[in-house]
Image (cartoon, rainbow, N blue to C red; front, side, top):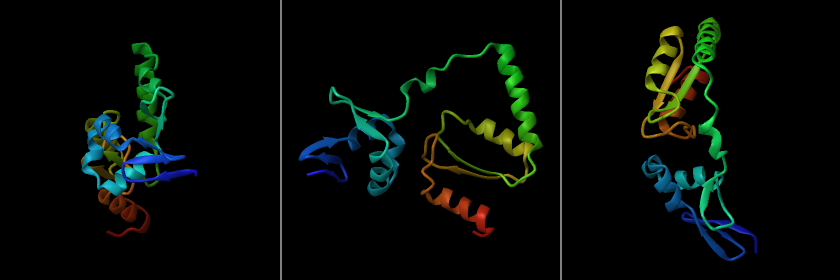
Length: 148
């Protein structure tokens, strides 16, 4: 029978596996997306565990990395900002306005150090915009085609 994707579930060999409600509960910003776009964003990013619960396919330990010492973090920060400031090429930053990874303050500092950087903050989106949002598409068009 195979696999069929619908708006609310994946049908695998006749068994309906619901994921949309689960994903929207985990990531409320999905609720602001049109249903078709949310379905497309989520269906490739989720899987069902053997116990029947849903989870995203990324490593759940990604946010539990070992924290460097303050000295190491400070040295890394200086190296990163120095490298960022030295860039001499066009730069485009598209960030989710609701990101808990790349703060608005850090993006502001990036802009201050690279004034020519083209920046788009995608409203209602978490860390990773899908690049199908109108704000992201407009920024991509400006960056690559030089138009609005």
